Length: 425
Ligand code: PLP
View 1 (cartoon, rainbow, N blue to C red):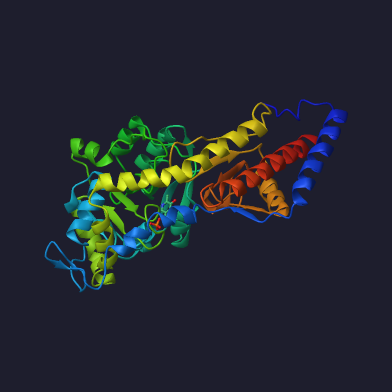
View 2: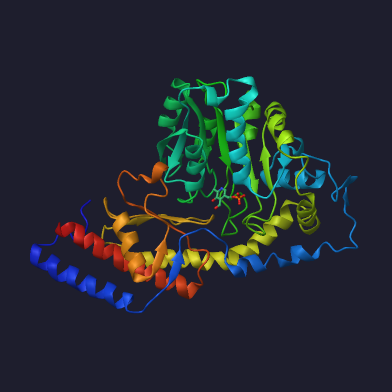
């Protein structure tokens, strides 16, 4: 579909780009400094979690289910913290290890485990020639950074409206033994906001990998992060795997980073009992145990899944108007021009925006000149290499509504000008 600018004759296009340039210049004259780059909760959201800090005092009992949180011990995490995260993920608490404050850290550790020790006795990846990971794109840049850091070859797989392109995933996973893993954010995916369909989840569970040490890195970072009462439903992949008795396929991750305090909450991995035993071979060397005081604070504050869901409903009150403003500003500014498409997620932290081919780097650079920082163009693709140079990740959570509105006006104006310039070239 040609953009509206591509259908104009030369004289009309010249007049239009001059007008669009004047709009951008007027915005630049305002001297804005706005940041729409990273998916951080706003201060108003984080403040909602301050009461978590009040649940422990020097007088509090620090014992949980007979475990002393104030001392070494319970390397799999406090029993009640394992129960809480198991309830959140709807898995068996015995299949969960709660450790540390960052799920990304746990993912990194598991890739490291595969490299140094090997998955379940398989040859360590460090001794193999080439190791590949599939990277649904657009996707989460920090996932891709982990495998890139270890020297893994990141292979992009296109995202669709129902999840990654499963025909391609099946072909690559089932025929190529060097494919050892895939990064997935199955609910409110970063950045599209897509929740994987039941069929996609079933096809993941039904994979017959060519490599015995292939694992799906199922990062359920946005499991309780719906914006509306009607939450997206994600099929529980471990339930589907249990039907087929093939549960040694998935590592599932989550954390409270966007529930309470980013980087200062609790994180977990869920896996089959045999995979957990394998994970312990490395995790129990890495540390005696992890921070159980923070775990205790969380379980004293959140009595169970319902308490977490209620807390997230308060977060959604703050976040929902921002997502709705994105949808409104983009529709008002760009609908009908055929210059951009974007997602309208019902949860998570991001909106995925696509301009014309060859536009993303220019739009991001122009926005920066006007005073708005966006996530770098290409960040949503492995190696920062977006083949169409069209995708931009919008992170609406951190700015105030007023700042967000201004930043979106800049994005709209720059997108139109770049689309006009591209049509003229
Ligand atoms: N996974 C996804 C999909 C994310 O978007 C983020 C943060 O933006 C993280 C993981 C980081 O989580 P943590 O703070 O638990 O390491």
